[in-house]
Length: 46
Image 1 (cartoon, rainbow, N blue to C red):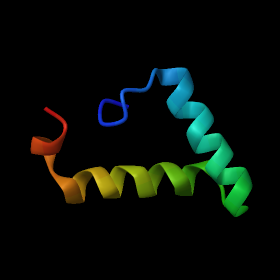
Image 2: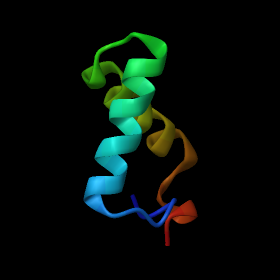
Image 3: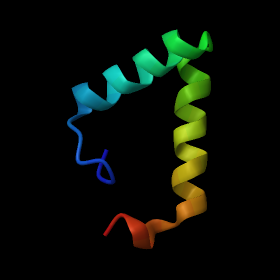
Image 4: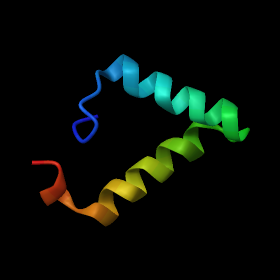
């Protein structure tokens, strides 16, 4: 949310849309987001 400057609702909608577009569960999209964030490291957020 911080990286893209999104509200919680906007972030949820992005995950929901990606899930529908790719036909994968929201849980899997969320896991991918977390993994990407971890790979970038905390320094990119602050």
